[in-house]
Length: 466
Length: 63
Image (cartoon, rainbow over all chains, first blue to last red; front, side, top):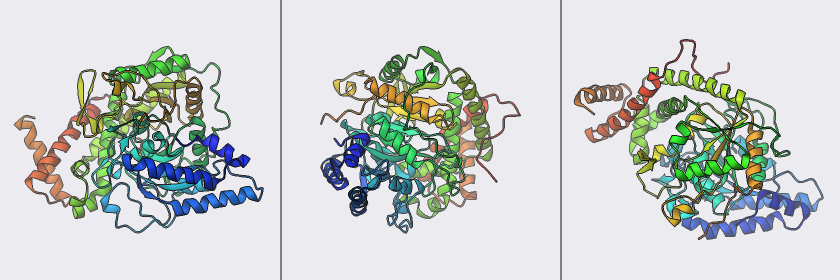
């Protein structure tokens, strides 16, 4: 397993190890572990060696090192990387011209000293909660290779869960950071909608698209988040807020009020997911249950808006190249493009209503907690999930607890919790993540709660048993 | 899905596909009808939710 961001940064800053040595270890881990998991779609080792040499040069000249100096990372393959074709998991993009420049957040990670080692597998066009990609293969779960990594940022979560990398980047439209983080047992952050610029990333649903980090420690998550913050006029949805650093203070304020989301979030959590919530709530001293009554309709609104925007975005190429889209994506995208405007407008009104209801909850609570997925990782190819006696299609159902939250843009930190619940020893060895949900722009509170759980030993990234 | 519900939905999908410039065979249309029927079912949740007229949509647009 590769070390944490804090460990690596300390080693490089103290001269105990060079950035080149860390990169060599990282490359060896990738070569050893990736073939069994299929996390990477491209490696950028030449660029990584240049970036590592630059960090080692700064050290040898006695210059100050940036906060992520020498920390290796990789990105979901919908982020532009200069000189590489941005696939977004799709064959239809394979013939596109290489990106002329890095995505804004990739450029910011480079400026913070991080070392880019590659691009990671994802669900085709980010449409789905699995990473069973028709063109680029299935990304498997590092804790059980018969199971999936979740999606759509499956390669990003599995690469951290497998111990190949301390940090990766992903995107989250309806749960695509939070679901794979939950299934692979890693930390993940979906910031407030508009906090991090999406410029230079391949879009899916402009109304909901977020970018954010995965990490094997809360400090690493916070350092990556801090490095990527800041205004960017190139993204019209970016809130253009000044940087509000979170990594310098990860202490939970005294008297913080934490509510446990019941209702929809309890009904769609199986015993393992409920146990994860129970463990996190107990460690945070949370005892009061509450409810977001519009959760179900917010999820429905997210579903409609996602279908409509995704279908409209891809319509020209669906007409021209239908056969080049994966079988599980193309008919859904076409159907979404037929959604009447009245449905979308009503869904956007619902979205506003659900947001207001959530703001009323945040008058009583500083944080809300809920499971990040309804169950442990499903088996690869599993068609349905059975949650408390109700069956739901796996591809859509894995996001049943995340969609209501991203619909209204709230910041969420997912922490890996190991409930030890399940019908078999294999299931009892798997994680279910917990969402720590904040009011808009309160990522720092989410991260501080995550740090509290990490320090208490409730949330941790465990090395794969195999 | 009953025939009385299925037919208008199928008719809508066929007409909307033609309007948008798609050409599909019957098997492909059947798959798209199935996907659209899921969207139609979930849209009822959205429309059944009571909203005041003052509830504005929430798109992002900053001139």
